[in-house]
Structure formats: structure tokens, C-alpha cells
Length: 465
Image (cartoon, rainbow, N blue to C red; front, side):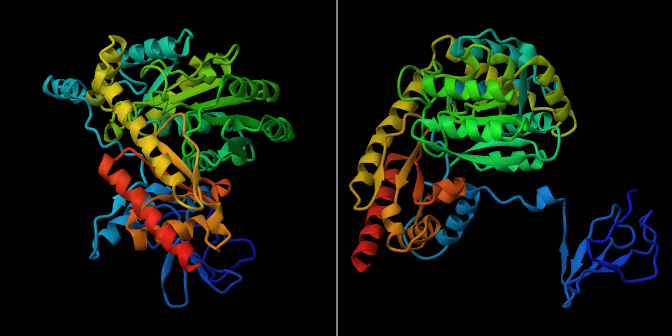
């Protein structure tokens, strides 16, 4: 067991040995420069985990720096606050804060999972995924991205997030390696980079994606230590779909910097042109020379309304897929077989053109998108562009910053006074200040009522300001 070392500047507070070799030994207690005691765990507690003890006797446990730095994802935190507000007297809370489709999972997917359970498929499965699903994913990605993908390039996991995290755990080779992430961008990007031991560097994104000149400056300025660029198209929170020219610019920078691209395409089935599954957008994987340096991350949650199933995948070079599979072995072990059977059914029906349910969902999302954007643009001091994909509206409320309100303060005010939950743009990075994100995946009545309440609160705010 490693020695228990006091914090820098601390002093030994007892004559106990400097090493706590076994749990049965008396713990070593140190006094920090601030006068707080640091101690090893009590007898029988196992491994050494420092604890700060305040003068009042309250213990505060300390963890690895990367874990200490973790924060909750904004959507989950807002859901919890909205649940508390919902317990107080007043109208129902309108939930526009999370990307949780209101539709049930299509029945044929559910039936496939139930059949799997009935057939006794309740044992361990291969860590990288059952062969049937890996083959189906390879065929789907080959068809939608226009490149040859083979099953050995596919790694299945419980959701898309493992694909992001495990890829970065494999790619970040040394503390201080740089990973470029979009600002604003999905909050788990920064968390995954930090957990992997890297340094997340935010580069601003606009309606067309990254600014190519700034991206190149940051990537090459890392002096060979930029190991990956995270790309998200269609994007969360803005709904931006990066066109081919934008993707080619990213690919050029990645090639010049000798960096991987981690391409988060979880909303690939929700682009508001073409048919679901056709992916009428440019995937980083499809560009010349990018198969060897791209990790494509996708999943079933958004397109197939399977958020609670937790099923996603990564597509990457086979040598990286092997490493990611080992990380799965030593973390989650495997993904439940019955869940994977549902995924096979989803992709099989899509390949056979049996996509009426998905087209219906996307038609509804488009209608809600248009209504929400129109409603937001009807509010004085608010503007919103029409998003090309995903299911979020990105509302520009910088005019209310001139009245002294931050995005976080506006979101709190809307929840408390309007009983409508939205996310402040700063939940997605500092580049989100002056914006609010609204999800339009709920029922029509909830979404439209939520926008009406936003207008009511902001109109009162301007009138009083």
C-alpha cells in the first residue's frame, strides 16, 4: 500500500509512523497549514483516503483531483430543482430542460427485448457487444456514412457516453495532453477529458461550427500535445449541423496536428431534411483519410426514443476498439443482451425501410421546432435561429444581460416565477452566457405552454426594469 503523504506544507501531528501500511495500524494524523487535521481512515476502513476534520468535528472526504472537479450535468440538476418546485402550490411545471423524448420506444423494439428475456438471454455477453448487433451497426454506419465499416471496428456500450469516455481514456497518453472541445458544448466532454487526465481546451463554435483559424491556432499551439478534437454535429445545445466545408476544415486541422477526431453523432437521425437513417449531414468518418483517425460515437437513445435502455456504440480503428473493449471489461463488463437485441431490431427495421414511426417522430419535432422558434422570436429581447438538427432551441437572451441578469439567473427566475424549466447556456460552457437552451421533445401542449410562460415572465421583467 502506498504511503500516506501529508499535503504540501503540512506537518506531522503525532509520533506515529509516516506510513499507514495496514488498516489495523493507528492512523497518522497531520495538521494542515490552515490548522485543519488530515487523517488516514479509522481502523478497518481499508485503503487510505484523506479526510479533512473541521474544528467542529465535521469530516469532509477528499478524492482524486479529477473526481473532486466533477459537477452534475446541468439538465439533471435542473430536473431536481424543478421536482422541488413542483411540490409547492401552483401550476404544473413545464419541462423544457432535458432531451427526453415523450414517445414510447417503438413496439417491435420492445418485443425483441422481451423475446430475448423469455429465451433466457440473461447471462454475460461479449464485452464489445453481441456479434449480431456489431454486424448490424457496421452495416448501418457503412450505409449512412458511405464508408466500409467492419464489426471489429464496433464497440457497444451502455449508452453513448462510455464511447466518449473510453475513447479519451485510451487517447490521452500523459497528464497535460490537450483535447479540444466545443464551447458551448455537451458538459460531459470536459468531464471525460478531465477524468482521462487531459486538459479540455474550449474553442468557440458558431452556427457553422468551429472557427477554422482559431481551431488551428489552438491545435498547433499545443506543440504536439493535442491528441483529439471533439466534434458534435448535429449539436447540443445549439442544434447546429456542420456542413461539408466545415467538417473538411476540422479534418485538415486534425491531420496537421496528428490528432484524433471524436465525432459525437448521437443526433444523426434527427436532421430535418431527408429520411431518418440517411444522415443528410457530413460525418467526419466519411471524409477522405479520416477513418484511421476518427472515433464515431452514436447510439439509440434519441433517434429510437430509447433513453432509458442505455445503448450506444463507438466505431474506430480495430486497434483502438480492442483497447476500448478492455476498458469495458474492467468497468461495466458488458451491455445487457436483451437491450442489444432491441438495438438489432431497431437497425433491422430501419434497413428494411420500416421507419414510419421514426418519420412521424421527426415530423412532430420539426413542427414543434418551428412553433418554438416562432414563439421565442415573438418575445421582445429574444432571438432564436432555426436549428438544423437535434431537438433544442438556442435562445439569445443577451438583451436581458443589459438589464443585469445572467443566463443562470434568468433560468432560475423562469423556474421560480413561471414554473418552466430551461437550461442556462453556461451549463454548456462560458460561451453559453447570454443564452438559454429549450428542449422541444415534450408534448405539444407542454412545449407551447412553456414558451408562453417564458414570454409572460420576460415581458413582466422588462416592464419592471
